[in-house]
Length: 307
Image (cartoon, rainbow, N blue to C red; front, side, top):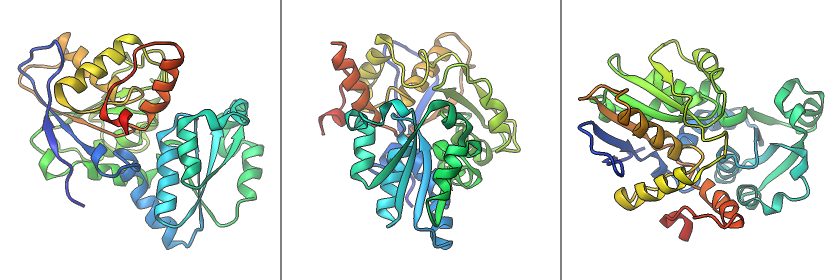
């Protein structure tokens, strides 16, 4: 696997002496992009080595991981099943762009109530669902397990050694844990959770890495998972016009906005060489744009939205 390009970028309306670069993991695969590719890598190897026929995983209606799992299953000739959060969307999932895409890639769905979903495998309902799926390989929500962390560590290569700070968006924390393991001794990782009240993730991540070379910035969730504001949409569009690099509004857009905010507030010492990891997830733009259009609000405008 050839290394993904590292590109210089600039922030709109911000002059800084920091050296800013982005690793374009979004370019690694058209659907299984960014961190999803690396988190799936060793899970797919294990599933096939054990002759499993079906991948089963968890996710919400906006989950990049669900779409990536469906694509990985199709590419590797495995059946895929998604256990989806929210029984209320059972009869209207066809209106959701992400679930439509996963379905077209061959994924079948089970929709479960949110209280059951929170329990995952501890739920009697979910246990029954899993019991009725023969010869399956279970991947956790967001794909975050030890094999996913092993894969995510490989995002960092010899080409990333010169950087002082590495930033990433955070969902379940597996990617940050992998970056923590793969980082050089002089490097520090800053994670920007997309979730509101995500302080608990620090403990989850600490279970997946033996290093303590990371911090979480909890201030740029924009109201919570898949929530956006006009400021965020404007920032994403301005960033694209300036750099020709698309950002998604669920993860990478929030990370980049947060990084800019930290620099503006002087929270990152001058002279640091910073590498942002582009974790992909651009398919999420379409569903967000659909919601914005319904509210007659400005849309995210990138080449991704025109395909």
